[in-house]
Image 1 (cartoon, rainbow, N blue to C red):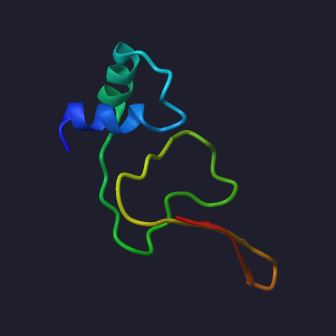
Image 2 (image 1 turned 90 degrees about the horizontal axis):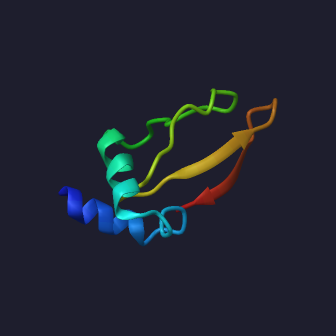
Length: 77
């Protein structure tokens, strides 16, 4: 996706909708596009919150597990 398409994509999302064009440019210039294979963990519970992820395509799942290993799914999208 080129810069203008990404800017349009971000400007339509709730978190970025009030950003000025210049601010969206700053975000996009700092962004790193990554392609991750199915089953890859973006982060794990307890990891420091040092990054933000924007899903451009595909699906993700957010879950935790209890001490017996049973998974509890919070969101699939």
